[in-house]
Image (cartoon, rainbow, N blue to C red; front, side):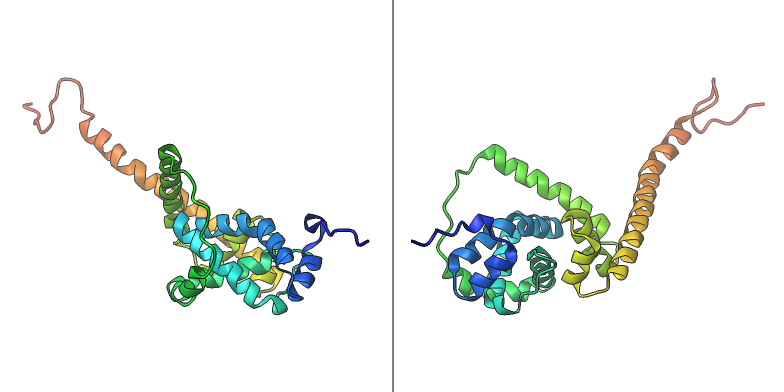
Amino acid sequence: MDTPVVMSRLSDHQLLTRARQGDGSAYGELFERHARAVYSYCFRRTADWALAEDCTSIVFLEAWRRRRSVQLAGDTMLPWLLGVANNVLRNQARSRRRWHAALQRLPPPVPEPDFAEASAGRLDDQRRMRAVLELIGRLPRGDQDVLAMCGWAGLSYEQAAAALGVPPGTVRSRLSRARTRLRDLEHQLATNSNAPADRQQASTTQRPGTTTGATDAN
């Protein structure tokens, strides 16, 4: 009698091999293993939970369609998935139209209770993330990609290089440049935000016994 295979104990390479042979449960395990990371990555690049959900679905639909050409980084599929996510995000309007019909054929998600507190928290997350993206959006696109993959998704230089199709040295230099530029931008923003208050304080600081606009009678 064959021993049942416990999917959660298999490596990404083993799961991918089974998925390429048409094993849907193996692909389902890959989804469960990496969907949250892809979803978080998409949210941090869009600051929109709903759009992140759509993009995550597109990423895994594309991964299933291209499962025979997936390239692992070491023994993990995540860098390749994030590389696909980058392309989806870069062409999100076109990609979402292209895959809309395919998404409609999927089973509808199980509805979740709409708790007001949870909804408010999601909106707060979106507002905070938009503020972060406004700052990061001032960086070159390649630097943004590296910062998101290494800083947010926690990929190594080698994994990010595999996802982006560039040498590890390029990832390292872009990340260093992005961090330096962000520090400069944060300092600049802090200086600019303090300047109006400083000017206002200076304009209302007077010598004892004088009033604004008064001239010295002597």
